[in-house]
Amino acid sequence: MGAALVSAEALPSVPQDEYELVGRLYPESAWMFVWGRRLLRDMVGGGVSRFLVGRLGPGCWSVLHTDSAWIALRCADGAMPARPVHAVACDSAREAVAHAAAGMIVDAGVAIDSHLLWDLGFVEPARDPSSVPLVWKPTEQARKLDSSSRDDGRARYGTDGFALELLRGRPARFCVLPPGPMPDDGLFLNRHELFMSLSHSRLPGDFAVSSGEELPAGKLLEGYGSPERPYLFSLRTPFERQGLPQTAGGHEWHIYLTRRPLWTFPGFPVEETTVPAAGMTRTTGPSTGGQGYLFRDSVSSLLRSGEIIEVSRWEGTRLLKEGRAQR
Image (cartoon, rainbow, N blue to C red; front, side, top):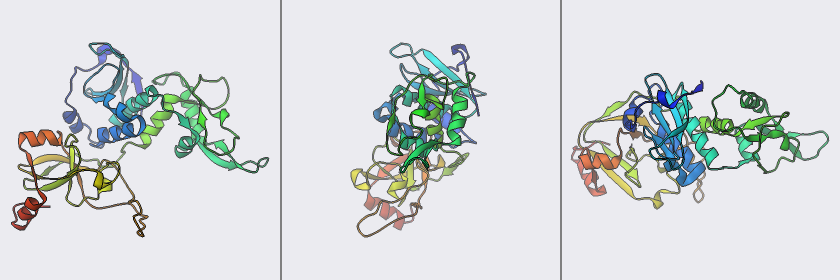
């Protein structure tokens, strides 16, 4: 895994078709860009619109592809045409998406707190013999990130970060760390390197790796909410596996019928979910069942081309009974 700065002259021509790039992701997960956008929605909200695949935009982060590498780059704010000011070549799409996502999180000024560092494994509560309450203690993983944060040869976005000595020995309670320059001594976590670690933990590894499969005509599929997403699900796929916020009641439910065979990539926009407790029912295990299908175009585009059509619940039931459709 590695990344190296590249010049603007080495960048590929744009635009590139995002759905064609999905087909080039194998042997990585075809759902890489879907998961990247989900991560960014969680971290920067509406700023996710500044994450582009196959094209450039002022102030945006983009992921491109060459014959030998995946490229993560940022364009200057407000400049037209879009002008790259930071670009790295990566060994994998996962590395490129993580680099771009981390850059976007840095740009958004997302704060770092003790609980996030704990979740990522950089600090842990420990008992100090001289102190009654538990205190924060840096881990071996933090020491490794300190080493990479001080490596001048690494391609990263920005030089500021967080001095872990501000946290060491403090009561193991929630607190926010202010960003600052790299100190001469003590553990230091570069901000972009830290958010790269976060991004890697939220992107698919071997999950949903597939070279694709053909979905037959006459297949009934379902989806909640906007048809601008490029994926649908088999009937009765649990709502919580469909990667949407809130509950099913907050989204419109749609049923679709494939009119011709479609090339898809099986998988899900989330890996594992737990159903929230409802009433007296308690669910402790992950939700299972169903199947997601990622297309090489958005659902709305497939509707316009007639490759799929929307049907009512009544019509879907009738087609199943008559043997003219399958689940």
